[in-house]
Length: 199
Image 1 (cartoon, helix red, strand yellow):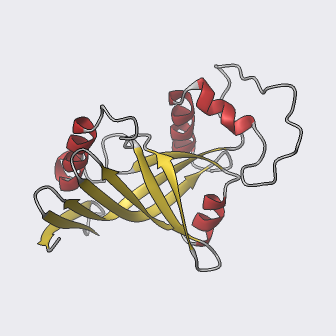
Image 2 (tube, rainbow, N blue to C red; image 1 turned 45 degrees about the horizontal axis):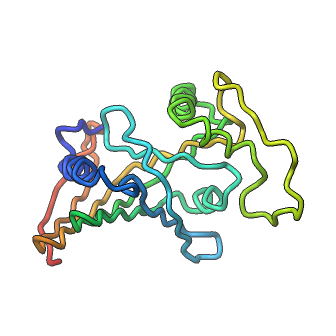
């Protein structure tokens, strides 16, 4: 795993998050996947932080959504993040790990639980609702779902972990663009290289 100090694009992203934090939409980005029909699919998701001290990006989602089917078909995805005040764009490409309740890895299940409790109660309640994307019944249920705040993750709650291998950074104010690419060393650690490219 690359440490924060050896992830050159991460500091750029942290700086952008800080300088745009006064905007309501600063933590939203687009996640693009490819479906089994070969067509792209895109949606807006919320940045849930980096995993531990590394460069892996966390996203919470419902296991019943189409993006899960897409990622099971093709585990690679790209996020696109645009910061409107600083005119900066990040395109981050990588492999996505799906961590649902059936994951056999105890460490990953602990990360899922940690992500669940880091979410607001309102956010957690969404996972108790009807299956996303299906037709909505004409009559809404009279009883709203309720949740004990100490209850662990709902079966529908899923943690997505994007492990970046390519990052394209563009600053439109300074007309500056750089591409970051990772390789894995013989020892198994991730190494990043950067190249300035034409905007």
